[in-house]
Length: 372
Image 1: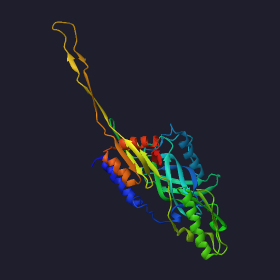
Image 2 (image 1 turned 30 degrees about the vertical axis):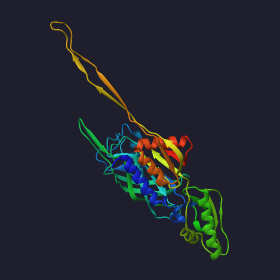
Image 3 (image 1 turned 90 degrees about the vertical axis):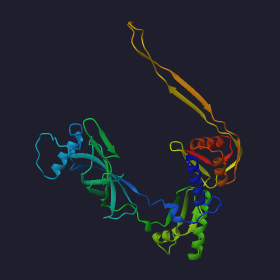
Image 4 (image 1 turned 180 degrees about the horizontal axis):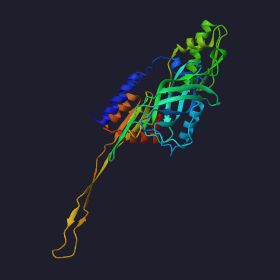
């Protein structure tokens, strides 16, 4: 199967999945297309040490902050130390990052990421010592400690080196413990702000109407109002908690609407065509120009008994071949006809991208063209 056929097959499959041919949209739950503005994660950051490395840690001469951290840690543990410098390479200075979930309570386990900041070559086999994690306000919200999980590796010899992924970055699943509850309490809020993952005016209105139909029957009042194409304000009825109310409206289903859009990735040749994309009648011709360059170097021998030397004279042959492209008319009232039109032209991935950009330039493409 050619690349063009693969792309067409993918586009047709996506069309079926999204109901492009029949313009049928599947019902989705409200909680799958919105998020609570107040229920957001918070970023945590900490500085720590990884110990137990097999001579792959920081060289303390090039990473003086690692040596300072070791001395400070030993002082806190009450261990006497000499004034001489360390020469160990089994310790690495790292930055530890994590996300504090919304409304997380004390004792909640979270994943942490570890990244080397010195000249360590690998964190494999290391253990992160106790590291406090701070929020943006400078307060400690979690702590991390444990054995590292490293997916990358590296090995080298005198004349060769091999590596896979990144051996200086690691994770500790559930290696962090929340020490202070995340700010805020959902049940204290009587006004919820819902944010759409894919902003759209029609979707915003559809959510508001669905919530109001539900609350008018159950609570005898309308509580939702659209703020714009991205945000919806919902007032929590007095007879129910915010948590229980959000759970009830989250199960309501709607038919979301989206803008007509085509996404192309020129690096991989990927073309994704949305369900509502249409093309006005347009004539297209697309041909290719093949240029071949061949080198035939020839050796020039000097005459006998002369002082000349053998030289290599370059010889280059350039051929140009232009593939003829017939003019085709494409009219795409739906995704199926657009894909069929491009398929009949036998366009390759790079050609499809060029054609779509050209159609957009003449104003015949009724969709947003996103080039990545």
